[in-house]
Amino acid sequence: MSRNQGAAGPRSHVYGFAPPCGFTPTPQPEPRPSFTSQAGQGTVPGRVPGLIDYRGREQPFMYRGPPPQSALPLRPSPEPDTARQVAILQQQLQDQQQQLQDQGNELRVTREALQVALAEKAAKEEELAVLNITIKELNDETSFFPLDVPTLVAGLDDFIIGQKAAKEAVAIGLQNRYLRQRLSDDGLRKATKPSHVLLTGPTGSGKTEIARRIAMMVKAPFAHIDITRYTTVDLNSLVLELLNDANKLEGKKQAGGKGPIASAAIDAAQSRGIIHVDEIDKICNNQAHAGEALQHALLPLLDGTDIKTSLGTVSTENILFICAGAFHQAAEHRPTGMLPELEGRLPVRALLKPLTEKDFIKILTETRYNLIQQHTEKMAVKGVEMIFETDAIETIAKESVKENSTINIGTRRLSNVMARVMHKYYAMHTEFARMEPITVTKERVITALAEPLRDCPI
Image 1 (cartoon, rainbow, N blue to C red):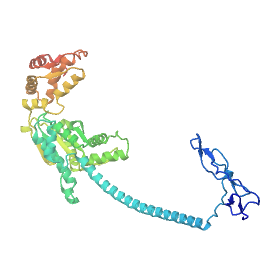
Image 2: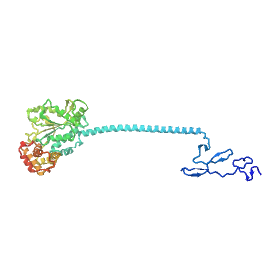
Image 3: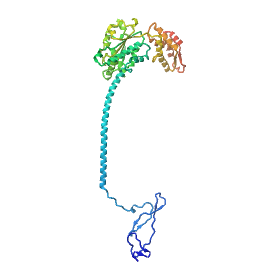
Image 4: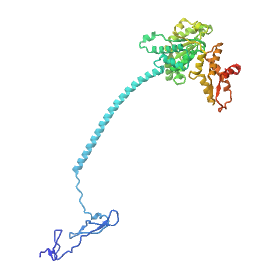
């Protein structure tokens, strides 16, 4: 029998050596330790590596939970791969350098694009500045560019009935001023005489209203001058009145000295200003107002001269003068008694016709902001609805024409008659907001006009 064989047969050894002589280990079943499951309930049989004893056998043990740290076999830490780490760091450094280079290229491209954009912006701003100057010139002159005469006349038709010839005359004078200012040849521009206007016709026919409305339409500085209130000494002060209106038109208060405001007002006055010289017939036939001297004093203003004011020097070269007078004593209201020199400087002329009953009806009903609308809106503020019957409006027009046959005051007669008709309603107590609508009838108009004038607000 071999040394390694016993009664039970050859001894098996797993670890490559035989146990001591005479010792036969008792076979034992494979231990099945149990441990706690992850859920923490019950035990799960299994094999967990244990410790090796001096015999080289593994000693099983029972435990719950994960094995202690000391029971795990110790493994030596791997040696650091220095070369590999250096290579990784170098690659990271190269990546960062490439990233920085790419960012630098992007910044360079962005900077170049920004420079191009700034250059384009500067060019566009320059173009816009030129365009704004052009737009300013157009807006300063008129919203009806290029001063089309039919368009201007149509605009005047909203406020003034009839008098087409006078409307066209004023529109032509304004258009000629605009065209003369834009002649490219300086010599030709200086040789071209201004197209000043002369309007003749009865009082109240619309001379002043036409001049005032067209100035409002083209947003031009405007001055209404009663020539009989001036002398040869202070005649130049009428330019100062135009300058004051230019200040108001610019939305500024009257300046007391020179500066940007005064400069803008001077530019507007001398390039776009309109001066309406009213009552010019009074200085043509009345020596009490030193008429001939005043006519002579007007000549340099019409030709174009420099006027010194407290705000600066104003040139009248491009100021449009619209002179007007009734000339009642002359046939067809022709300008009699006017100096030939003055008459020659007013080339554009028109005669306004007396207004008829039909014209008065249209003035009361068709013009913008007419008298009927004004009175009904004022009564509406008090809470009363006013209704004017057609017969009542026709009666107002008829009576106005009748009273003008005695003393002709033109359209101003309508305001006179309307005030007498509305006197009763304005005099009523103000607490009548719940009253029924008031209807103005023909009978009411006749009754109101038959009342004594001392009881009526004229």
